[in-house]
Length: 424
Image (cartoon, rainbow, N blue to C red; front, side, top):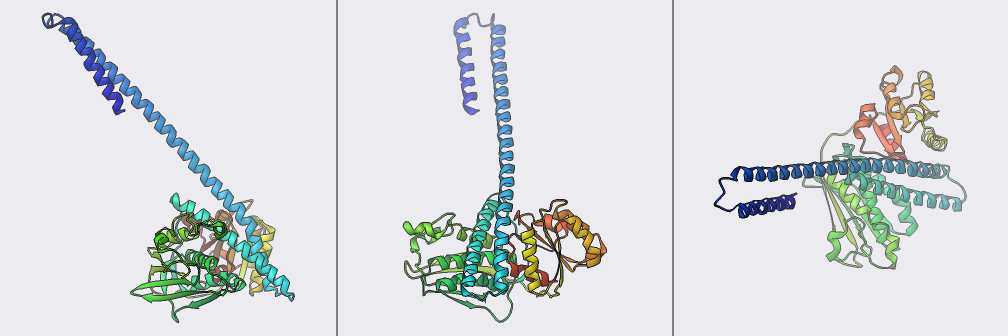
């Protein structure tokens, strides 16, 4: 708009100069009134032009903002739907593999095949998490479900998740944990995700026969988590870039096999959301690498009280039945329901101590079912756990408002679910 005003002002000066030149100085008094009217007309035209330009610019800006809002809404709907579809496909595969492992097949070939299926499906689930989390963070939708957490718990979980991968590659995995708990105000799933990404990175770049070590310790009021490997190492000059999205450390034909370059970027985002720091050091190529996470510590240990009778509500029969079998294998008494109406019919007679509820139910969604369960005597004090294919951990307030104690994206990590059922 500034160039337009400048041009209009120049026009005004030119026109008034022309009038002055035409009428001359001798008869200026006689036509002063006419000249003033001409100048007034010019000024009025300028004001109208500026107003029209401003209005047009405002309308264009409002239109652009509306289009941007619509695009953001479409993006959010797409991400939610994509998450739901991908998770609903991967979750039964992982649960089925876990169940087959629990059945302990006699044929070693079957056991090895199940381990491969589980490993590949788990890596796919991790990739889905990473890609969606980066998108949520970029648009301010990534939040934490903080609790007073013994950091040894997510470390053990991450090690258990990737233990078979290291064994299959014949890479030694060493773990050093403190004897007593180290408590932090943290999201258990997210801290485990950080370590899983660090361990996955070490696994990719450590050759057969190498070693990866994990160490958790207290240092100057902080929890210090270190992952060190004897792998290919990193050129010190490019170390500052390793936490950059899609960055690949090795520009070679083999680079395509090392993933998308999102794991370390996600780890950095999650650590910083916890108020912590993450860094990397390496003496160069062929000399391994070390990643260090520092988190502030808190105190107090939660008490435990395990729920044994569990209601599983899910309209996906594969997911519901596999999850029920896994829980039964751990000694839980499980009641199954395919929708909210069936769950509400079963509850008065069964009185479950915990309910594992899918959010995307066909008759009423899991949020509404949770609200109803908090209103009836039999489940008012029961533990409510959401399992959602939409994977929107950013909806922390929505889960809490509905009355859920915990929530997990599909596929749920079965060990985390067991722990959630065991907590007070």
